[in-house]
Length: 128
Image 1 (tube, rainbow, N blue to C red):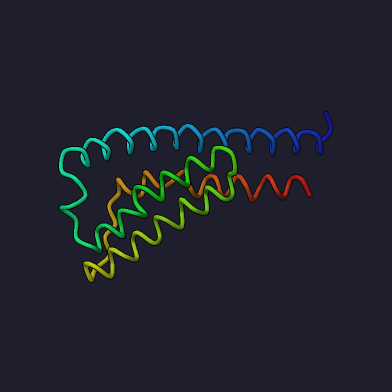
Image 2 (cartoon, helix red, strand yellow):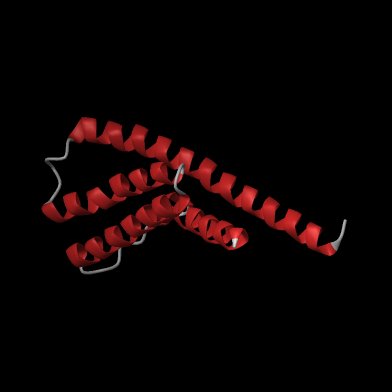
C-alpha cells in the first residue's frame, strides 16, 4: 500500500471513530437527560423556576438535547445547536448569578456537540 492510500485509510478511520464516539456519547447524554430531567420535572414541575432559570433551562437541557438529536442526521447543524445552547446557558447563568456557573458534569454532557462539529468540518475537508 502506498503512502497516500495509508493516509486516506488513517483519515477514514479517524473520522469513523470520531463520528461514532460523538454518536454513542450523545445517545448516553440524551437518554440520561430524558430519564433524569424528565423525572425531576415530573416531580417538581417547571413552576418552581425563576424566569432566568427557565430561560437557561430552554438551552440546557432542552437545546442541548434537540441539538444532539439533530446531529444524528446533520452533524454540523446539530453540533452547532448543541454547542451554542451550552454557551447560551452559561451566558444566561452568568447574567442571572453574576458569576460563572461551570459544573464539570454539564461540560461532560456537552462534549458530543463539539465532537460532531469537528467531525463535520473534517469530513467536509476530506470531500474537497
